[in-house]
Image (cartoon, rainbow, N blue to C red; front, side, top):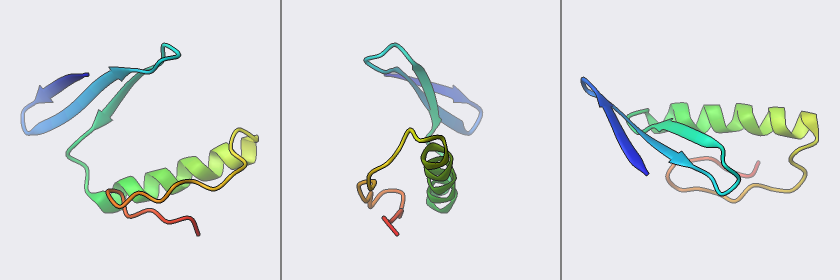
Length: 65
């Protein structure tokens, strides 16, 4: 994992086991991260790529509701 910085912004860059490169901002408010996770979950469910419940994460404040 590599840490990227630009001014007061910070992100981490990583590569998944399947070879996908991900870049995630680390300075986002937890409320925004929770909303983005919920939006992504909806898109994945509608596309059929996600069928089961998601685990609850205390870091993002997301729930399984």
